[in-house]
Length: 589
Image 1 (cartoon, rainbow, N blue to C red):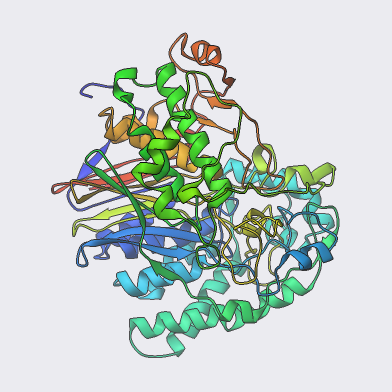
Image 2 (cartoon, helix red, strand yellow):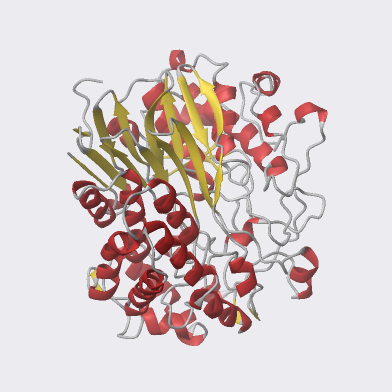
């Protein structure tokens, strides 16, 4: 829309563009492009910087799904960096620890850390740089320091008592010099040393670039990192149940892992084709929403009108109800993904969208199969500081996610959503400077549900990067932090751009909304039927939405969503970043 005000300009160029949730990661990734690297080299370098400068949002012990388009291969691809549950993880093992559910903090929820494997797979199979070169930025910030975000300082203030009383290794890294202040130069020398040792052991393996990367993978998954992780999990650590438990992760679990290359799940929408990760993620819920909305004349309702918001919300309820009933690791469960994404299934489900808000959770029956919503036994959460730490905590200590997207002059695009290994959700591994993830909390203990915990199985993650093609040509790479909201906030961005014609930055800047109607993926899995969270809208819109039966919770302006996006149209590259949170930045030339 010509002349529309945006918080920032859409960056346009022809050489390369980057958008990420932290300006330092964006600039480092751009530096890689400037020095001859491709989009995948740049994404890897920026991804490791995010581990250092946003440790409350992701880490070396976490996970990352990646969706990409490599121009020489002419197709989209997914790299799955979601690690599986330990071999010893099963329903009886969790109950045997005295737990009704997998806690949202501590060691029980640790899966194999998949992020390192996925970044290495991306570098090895699609990149051009050596390991030392992509890691130099992260090592520099970890060893020499970076300006500590105020949000990190606030998180540390919330978890200070937890660290000092129970997680002494975390206190040593983050509180050794006292409680840090916002913007002070903060260092993590143990993490810098871990990166450095990975490089040394990789180079000691000898050979070419690919051989070095294989050497780094061995050092991480079969060497010193795996050995330290096993020792770490053998020592009980306090978790959100209020009791100290050991972890189940072992070195043999680590050595069995390798990041997977997969075909994406895709759906057409008007002239667009959107590619997402498979049903081990929530990505297909984005595609199901598109299928449902394709049967409505959304444009005629008016952008962000009450009817627009009503239709999007009601379709989200149906798509996420199916997520609750059907999504799981397809290597372990029969997930009817083709039926769930079919036009015929969407046509039937669309009839459930009425003029008033639904307060029911209504999964469908693809191919006539009976859906099953998970049966849950609520795990009590210990009072006190435990409600302020970990993945489902409140306020500033809540776990979250990062994103980085890159497009280069060659025609490559990539979107990556790293998360997990949050400093506030699990104790630091002594001497390594990072902690393990807690993604296993997304499993359930219902033996008849497809997403119940099993050894070697990937938990159904919320992480959900996106790639979109227009008339068969790769056009957009985008994503956002936000847990269950990721495939609602990015859907709003995509509809604004693809359907209503807003530019990249205007689509990001537009007021955001989402529903918390369905159970949260994070412990304790709360749901709020009928609830819609919305930034301020045009006068009267939210009142009209309430008249349709929605419980509207008005959020502050500029508080929902963190979408980052890059685009390619012809030879012109574009990038935009979210002003919300004051961290994301786009760069390019």
